[in-house]
Image (cartoon, rainbow, N blue to C red):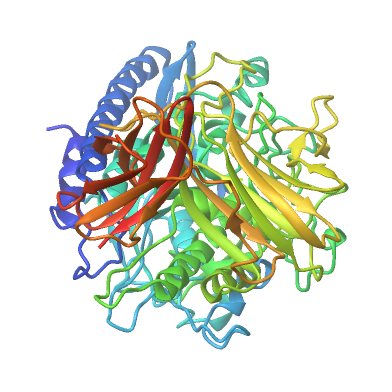
Length: 640
């Protein structure tokens, strides 16, 4: 049996032999539907088989050309030959060249200013489990990690880099308080990066929602002529990330942007160019943020954007002089720098923020609810502090400096129905949603749209083809005009502009400074339909919308569309009544979709007043799409 096939069996066993979430399990999980689990299992097998075929070819190439399979560098860095592409050997390697303070995660931790005292562990003993793929495994007996790490296979290979990375995510500071990580009571499941895509699909199928990846192609081993074409390209590695994430709507991997920066743009490769992953740039420590001048990029951090001019990397965090665990002893620590050190700071922060969201939305039966990954990305962008020389995002810092404190405050404001609102919705083909908000006048009105876009076709080296599949749009309007989302200028200046629609990014952020009074937020899509490659799914696109700088509901955020129908009661149990406000057209119908966009029930509507039996529907949230003549509208309904 092949090594990576063995690893998948071990992974399944460690995840409890089940791909469905359980409220009674030790680890906190998100729900996974049967179709999602089936698709993810198929992707896991497909990705693993591809890796094994690529690796077998690479071994033959290495033997014929007298190339090493493993290259070891300074500070425990390691690169492994993984594939041959265009006759070029690809070596995957770790990126080695006060995180909580810089990202304001310390406000969430025990003793933090928000009073949340989050650790990654719940009062009932459940814990958050984070996946970490790296060039080996952490020292399991380290005093800051002991009892909270486990390996995804049995190969051993304890190394410095994964020990340092794991310490940044979950180190509890037992042996040195200055080395404390982010989620100090969370656990990790650690993997070697050899066959990461297949293992990530299996991990996501288990209901787990976060992972860290501080590695990528070792660009130092490439011919410069090849790199000039390869950088910025949406390749099969990025495509694999987007494929598995579409089937796992709660799963969010975090990637190091890379340490190949030289002060020029277009240096990103691999998974950092995926549409749905979070790519992290490295900056110096920020003791107290004042304005954009407080944030300084590390000289090694890789700049974007992607070849199709998407905003990459996504966010910035401390990657200089990060103090964390070392594998040289059970109480050993070391300073290290690199985007490898910045990424786990973001991963650990998101672990606490997902925990906080689940605490805010925990039900009476103890079931934990987490944010979709699209919501996570929306809030990362929404709450980021300005960085860079010009307003808006850029290819150095992404959306700016991570602000976990502001992220948590938005979660609380949404729950309390005060100054912010978070919505997770489904856009159906041909529909437009409009929401009216009342800007508070005390802070900017910000509206951020995000969605997990389906995977695109991998491009040839140097391809600048747009890889966005479902082109959603957001605008904010009032009597004075229309406000558009940020996007990178097309003139090669790498400056953000907001003078029209964004047709490349699947995060769109609109900022209206000095906003006051009534504004309308509009969500729509281009083309005549939407693509949904999920098993058993109909054309649709889940999306997340975050709005802040508003007054409390109901005036704060409402759907102000003139409805052609009403649905009642809501919540419903046995029947749903559908009443039309206008004349009924021939062929009117109702279609019920579940939260995965699957058609689960349909009915013909023959009168102005209609009754639909819904006893056959399971409890949960549904979207009711009503078609009357040439008009279609959608309404949410809960079956209890």
